[in-house]
Image 1: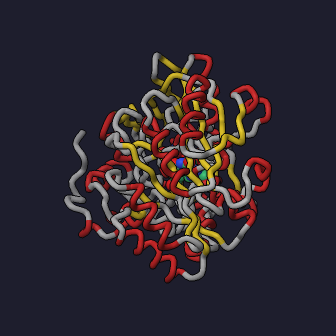
Image 2 (image 1 turned 180 degrees about the vertical axis):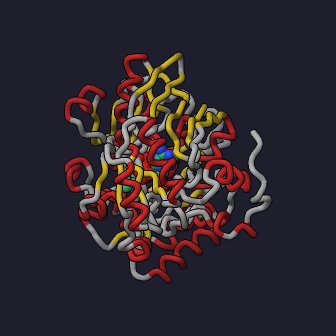
Image 3 (image 1 turned 45 degrees about the vertical axis):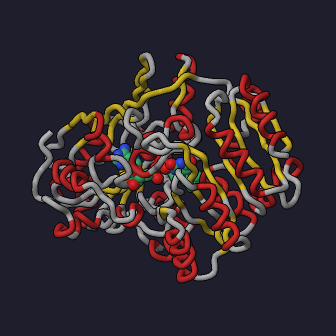
Length: 459
Ligand code: FAD
């Protein structure tokens, strides 16, 4: 694309272009290096140029010119995705949305902002209105709202509101088509969700409108246990206790807590730990429940202490558990799993018995899209070979556990090949030339796998 890219940047010379090789290399990466498999597969993939627009007009100019010159566009938030979602496979332009970041408004329990806003900024803006985001990934400090929608799942708060994909969480999406005359389309409800978790292949999201929840001055606690089963029972019971208000319940089987060197004084060696974010008025009830399971609350910080220290336990949960552990042991990687809500604890115990020593149990308690209490796993793995990694994932599947494979970069491969055909129809509407993040949506590349792929969506 060298010639076309040169034309693009000279036609739009007033924009903020990035060509310096090191910066370009950084903007072509995300956190796919958590996976030794992806690290190898995506090595050296680069965009030809990056641009950081600040207005809708600037985005429109870039998109219109790329459509005219057939230049691929890879949209980027702040690049904290784990599956190479914003790694360009076919070069072209990296559209860095992090400068398009204005907060819009909060009205009752609804908030709206431009997609490049950082989640921390959105949450801070909502708090004076007595509201907060319903889900905060552990990357909330830097991750963008558009990136969470395009490549993320949920986070702290999913214990109450499920993942982003639960109906009612995302209310509206304003997005731009990739055409020589780009159109702006506002989608709501189920239709808006056809752009969710599609890795920026399905339109350029400009603004998002999301449902909010009541803000709480959350406390943060660690409960430690000597018995795996007792810790697991506590985590599960506390998660579903209807009177105890909480935002986060993270179960870490031994020896995961031993990797948290900065918290070592609160984590006796070899312990199992449950990290919780809890409403102050529910702490007494939580402590009673910890004691009933033979555990001990070793750490407690009030919301004021958390804010003053600028340190939060959230940054030890979700995939930060993996990040923190990998800093201590570079030989680790991870898998993602979804248990069966009707028998999740039995599945966890059986897999712990079978794989302890090689697989370390990290569970995030949450509610499913349908509302059931469940846990999903981000288990740490002592990596040996890709073949053994695949074997471990197969053992999980054989126990009836769903694997959301984090070692693949194609949208369908992370979803057990379950892609709503309407997603591909939506791509016809938003990206008829297939310029958005090419190589990531198999049903587009192999239309015979996409039912009615030629039918544009009507709504
Ligand atoms: P990026 O990585 O920049 O982009 C993600 C995808 O969205 C890309 O495919 C990109 O093309 C697309 N995209 C970005 N902006 C737009 C736009 N405006 N329009 C269209 N497409 C767009 N995820 C969770 O869900 N929960 C967690 O708790 C969590 N914890 C994590 C912890 C660590 C340590 C790491 C490394 C990752 C974690 N993640 C988690 C994954 C990731 O951080 C989140 O999904 C995050 O919200 C992504 O935001 P981002 O701005 O970095 O997106």
